[in-house]
Amino acid sequence: MRALEGAAGPPDRLAAMVQAKRAARPATLQESQAGTRPVRPSLVAALRRARQALQAYRQALEAGGTGTAVPSPGAGLPIVAEVKRRSPSAGDIAPSADAVSRALAYQRAGAAAVSVLADEAFFGGSPADVAAVARAVAVPVLFKDIVVEPWQIDLARQVGASAVLLIVAALEEDRLRSLLRYARDRGLETVVEVHTQRELERAMALDGVSVVGVNNRDLATFEVDTRTALRLLPQVPEGIVRLAESGYAAPDAVAEAWEAGADGVLVGEALMRSEDPGAFFEGALRAWARRA
Image (cartoon, rainbow, N blue to C red; front, side, top):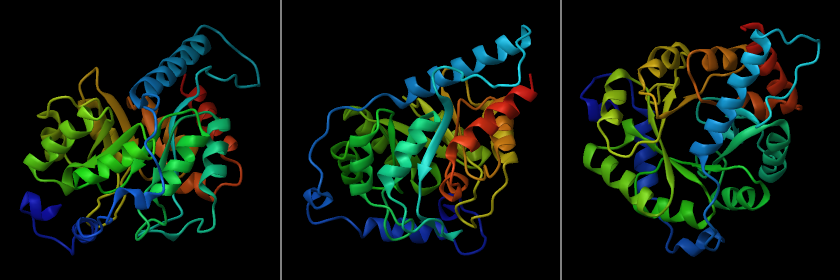
């Protein structure tokens, strides 16, 4: 949050969401209507496999592969496809969408992983959505929420998620470190999300970071600039999975992020508004092919 970094500016929308989330703890975790789930597939491994397959596809094209058809890269595409019915910035996106049907469509289209909003107040999701999707798909599931308390990590594990999101701007230093450790001790991977150079430096000072997400959306103002990922992704050290997030409305933009070094691109609104997610995925692969 801007308040955490000592900067002045417009009303901080993230701060309001954090405040609401801290007051939202359920009386019992059983209210999520989900029992304990087995450990899910690894988000890190899935994105690495998909990125390797994409690179192999690029090498085949450079070696002289031709043809009008675009072949599959073989292990899915490095896209994290998001189930999101609404957002504070866009309002209603697909308010009546069925989470499981949408997630299965993403899986069929070749998504390496699925992100599911667990927040109802701001995004129209729920932990029950995460649980239902985790039961239905074989790919890793990201529990997408503003995580500020350990109970949310316990809930993510209960509903069958593979990973949780930790937003650097929403967490003070000690809390960020403790939640990262808490998630790791419970077998969950974490996506540590940054938006600025300073936040990236904070993330890189942590032990055990396996995925860094660069969010193109300023969560204080909701303004989007996809150049943010292009600038920050190359600074993430080798060995850490790089995820580009927000603002990917067109397949060409996804291919540009891959070109900048993204091991995965999180796409939400564009896919939720699309009647054919597969066409978006194919468009991203064709755009990548044109860059070979």
